[in-house]
Image 1 (cartoon, rainbow, N blue to C red):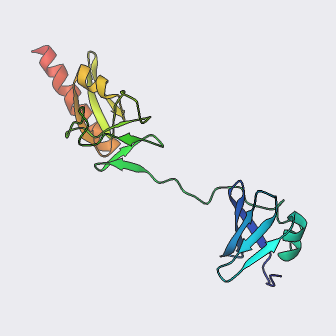
Image 2 (cartoon, rainbow, N blue to C red):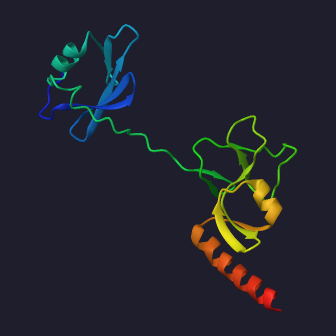
Image 3 (tube, helix red, strand yellow):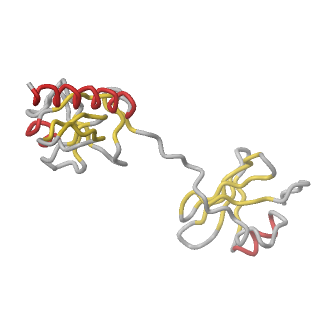
Amino acid sequence: MVKTKNKAHLQQISDVAWLVSQGPRKVGILNRDVQDKYFYINGKQIVKLGDEVDVGEYFSNVNIFEEQNTVSPVVEEDFYIKGYLVDYPTPYPLDVTHDDYNPEVPLYTKTPESDVYYAAGWYCINFEKGWKHSHGPKYSTLVTYGYAGPFKSEQECRSVNSKLNKQKKQNERS
């Protein structure tokens, strides 16, 4: 049995696994197997437990499952291609050996077999009515209308976009 001043708490990390914390310290992992039995791993030993009641008794907290923290401890990391942020959770970057690879534009698809390409980063796009900024646009849009970029930040893109719109208005007056 775990004996401490701080009550044990669970942080769910999957459907069948929990981080076990006591105070600010993470002390181990609790797992549930396919037979709905539990086992606790603390780095020194593996403790086999029966059901949820056994888990509560072992950790001296009969409400351990009711009090669990269900907020994920995993923080999703941002994905970058050539230093440009991708605004999609699971991108598939185009390999340099791919026929449509463009060294000037970091391209990705949203599924492995897709032939719709997206551009990582911020872009200024030259639409008929003026330049507009966009993050992660379709590559076909960039090719169709013309573009400036990529830019690593929205601020940099907006600054260039503003200058391009001023130039476009001056050219239309001339």
